[in-house]
Amino acid sequence: MGSEKKGFLNWITDRMERMLFNGVKFIIPKKPTNPLAYLGMLTFMDFLLLGITGALLTIYYTPTFELNLTNRTFTSPWNSVKTINDVITFGYILRNIHYHASNAMVLLAILHLSYQLFSGRYKLKNELIWVTGVIFGLITILEAYSGYDLIVNVRAQLAMNVGRGLALNTPFLGDTLANLLFGPGSLSSMVIHLYAFHIFLLPFIMVLLAVFHFPRNLTLDIPMISVIFGVIFIIAGLYPVELGSQFNPFYPAPVTVPEWYLTALYAFLRTGLSPFLVGVLIPTLYIVVAAIIPFLDKSRGFKISDRPLVIAIGVTGLVQFAFFTIWGFQGTFPWIPLMPLPGEETILLFLDPITTFAVWGALIVICALAVYIYSYNQKRKSVKPQPRSISNPAKSKQLNPKTLLAGLIGFVTLQVFLTVVTIISYMLNLQNIVLITLGSILITFGFIYHFYRMLSS
Image (tube, rainbow, N blue to C red):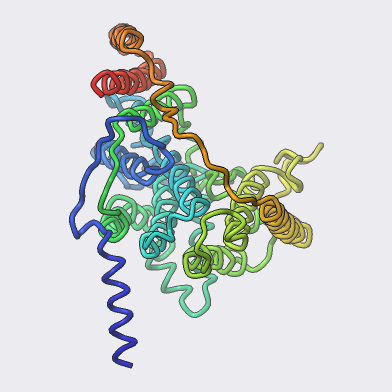
C-alpha cells in the first residue's frame, strides 16, 4: 500500500515539473512558427482581451429591474446594454469586440483541444495538462453562456429558462443546484447569480486552473496574436452583434435559438426526452470520455495507425458536434429551415427522437469505420522510410533583404493610411468602419513585426 502511494505521488510530482508554478518562461520566437502548437496561448490572450473589454463594460452595466404594472412597462439590464451600445463613448465598439472575442475564445479552445488530441501531444507527460484543458473548455462555454444571458433579451431568457430547467431536473440535487446557480427563480435573481459567475467566480476558477494547465514554456508570437485580434475586430465590424428584442413578461416571447456553441445541445433537448438524460447525462459522458483519453491511449506512436481508437473518438465527437450544431438552427431535418409552416404562426421545434438518435448512432459508425479503414490502409502501405537529402526549405524560401525592406516600408505606409482612415471614420461616427480599420491596423502591425524580425535574423 505504501509503495503504491509513493508511486502515485512520484507520478504526480513528475507531471508537475512542466507546470506553471515551477517557473514560467515566455518565448518570443525570432522566426515564424507553427501557430497550431500555441493555440492555447492564443486562447489565453483572447481571454485577456475579454477581461479588459468586460471590465470596461461593467462600469456602465446595471443588473437592475423595474416592473410597472400600471403602465405595463418593464425595465431590465437590457436597457443599460442599449445605453452602452447607443450612448456611451466607445461602448458600441467595446461591446462588439467583447461579443466576438467570446465566440473566438470558444472556437480557439475547441481548435486547441483538437490539435492536442490529433497530434498526440498529451502523451509527452501532459496528461494533467490535458485533463485541466478539458475542464478549461467546459468553463469557457459556461463563461460565454453566462455572458450573453446578461443582456436579458429574448434569446437570453430562453437560455436561462433552459439552464434552470436542466438544473431542476437533476436527480436529488435539483432544487439545491437550481437555487445555487440561478437563485430562487425570479428573473432578477437569475441575472444576479449569472452576473456573479460571469465576472468573478468563473474567471477566478480559470486563473486557478492556469496554474496547473500552462506548461513552463509559453510561446508569445506577437504577429499571430496581433492578427487574431485583428480578425476579431474586423468580424465585429462586418457582423455587429444585435441587441435583440427585450424580454417583456407582459408579452409572449417569440421562438429563438441559443448561441452556436449550444445549438447541438438544444437539438437534443428538442426531442422531448428527459432533460436530465439529453441535457446533463449525455454531455457529461462526452466530457468524461474526453478527459480520460490520455489514459485510454496506451500506444507509443503518434500516427493515426498507431492509435485508431483515440482518433476515432476525436473525429466522431467533432463531426457530431458540427452536425448537430447545424441541426440545432434548423427545423425537423437539417436541410429544412426553422420557420412557421404555411398558414401557421407557430414554429415546430420538436425533433423526432428516433430519427435524432439514429443519426447520432450512424455518425459514430461512419466515423469509426472511416478512421479504422484509413488506419488499416496506412499500415498496409507502410514501408521502411527512405533516406532524405538534407535541405533547409525554410532558408531556401526566405526572401532577400531588399524584398523584405520593401515589404516593411509598404506595410508601414499602409499602417499610416489606416490610422488616418480610422480617425476620420471615428469623427464621422462610422463605428463599424472604425472596427474594420482597427482590425486592419492590428493585422498590418503583425506583418510589420514579421518582416522586421526576418530582417533582424
